[in-house]
Image (cartoon, rainbow, N blue to C red; front, side, top):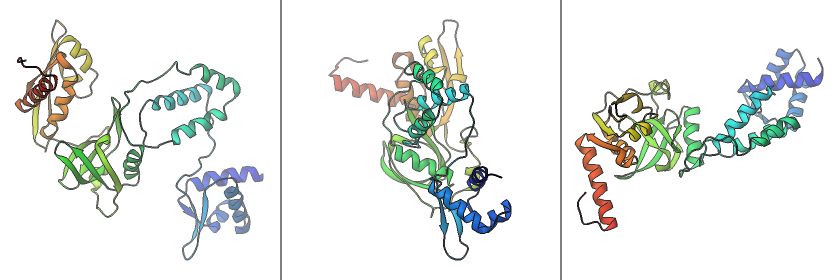
Length: 318
């Protein structure tokens, strides 16, 4: 086997291992420990983040940012990945910070010239638009790291009741309408909650807090069962335009009952603790939505209207 082939195979093997010794690799490749040690040194010199662990039980480890082996893409696959990465740029923040941009630049640099020219023609011609919302990449990275390392996180969360500290076990992250959301299990009150990332004042990993194994079995496609929480029926009357605006919503869309004139109603069961969230969601539809129940949500909207009247100096009733 040529040395270049051996180094590639060695790179692929150590990328699949968390830790290893020169003896283990020597036995696997049928080489001497001296040769393996020299190969590891060469890989380190060309940028592979391998380092030695001293003392008893030592050996070698890779730093967190491991180098992946070469992957062959077809031209259409390359274009698809490039457009997908570019679409993420419309979000205000990403859980992996600037690494998406650096990966895209590396990807672009090693493409053949004719493929780069085709990609250049797509500039500002294909996009996935997303509203610009305030967000912190550092916050998103920490939440994502908590998921990857199966670790709890301690957050300071700002809500209408003030800012409070919570220990949470994040289930995942998702973006919707420009906002980032983190469904999580609150280890303080034993309930599942949906946290909006832009309302998280600070976040840190907290390995001292024990997590619940059943929570790690959940994900965004397998959400927690909130039936044990106090529930409320949220019903809204919609104009035809309101139906069109809400039909793509994952929660309300399937519940819409349409009338012949295009208007409709939607009634869903929601956690009572999240009524304000859903009322604000309907508020954005303006005159195209009217909350029919529960009374608490109606009173909340009336309060917002009264506040708007005072702000604009309206004296007549609404």
